[in-house]
Picture: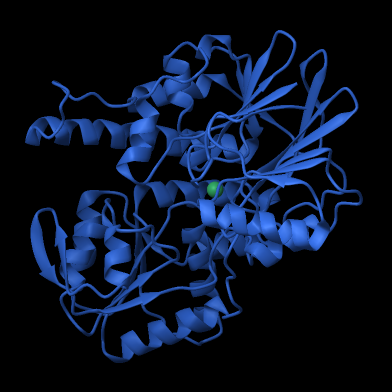
Length: 451
Ligand SMILES: [Zn+2]
């Protein structure tokens, strides 16, 4: 079996791993490159392999940097099965069409303002193409073996990162190969913890936080302080949030704080069609949660849902103190921009960012203290308090990664460190070598390895 790294090398996006056996080819993950323009341009380059020659895809989870290339793969002729967990399939059925819609919007904007060198600018794929791709999904149960071809079987185990997230274990001959996908955390309040794995010959491990620690600040205490401080000023807390996972965790914490009387009973609004859909998936996949069905329902009822644009506008129409959760998480787009325009200029309000802000996004610039921001071509002074939640990440930090690795009963023959910026991946490599003495490499783009 040959393993080729087609993405997530030197970056945290574009996860794609090609497995070539005698006569067949499989992909593990099929993600989009995101972030900086030079990375996004890579999505437009043809794959080093003809999609028609790929027999099947296995997805670790639904995040776009792991699944977002699927519609393009199908558009370019892939006709095999896409295997994943049930919750991953349900999340992909909302995230992929949304991704298609955003690509169409980008193309429309580029045509309107003429900033594309292509005339006309075209979307990478459309919402409809993403919907067509869903026909190829085939959901599987955790812990059960599935046959890819005569010599290769696979199974999934929980990875604890978001709903449905999985480790993929492939077995060929008497060898095991494990893909961690994104590794979650042992103590997330909502989602079930990652499974403990004890044996593998080869391991592909992520390293998003390969050089960082989350610290031990209790998230609920931090939210409690920020909310009370803002409400005492009669202000509003606006939380730009990520639709899947983060939003449901925030709703869990807000419910907890309200129930225990630590924050006042002010209205909470969830204003993001995508986050509302993701919350429905959250309630329908109780097997993914630590929470009971009743607790899930309670958490989902903490917010008023704004589905339509009118409902969204109505939130800002009155002046009463409130909490608004809205996407996108780094304030790069979406409905949160409309709320930002209303709330960012008044010092009584707080803009609370719910975790890591990628470099040079609007969120990152505000967290770094910029005094003005531009939204839809207009300049707004930043007078509201700007806050950032720590320790709410869905990724294991390096201590947690090492702890998860410590359960392996015998050293893997080789560990491949991916899905991290170069310094993070290299830093994790050194830590694994020092602690366990295992052979680790940080593969480059298109690196090939015979297993
Ligand atoms: Zn992820």
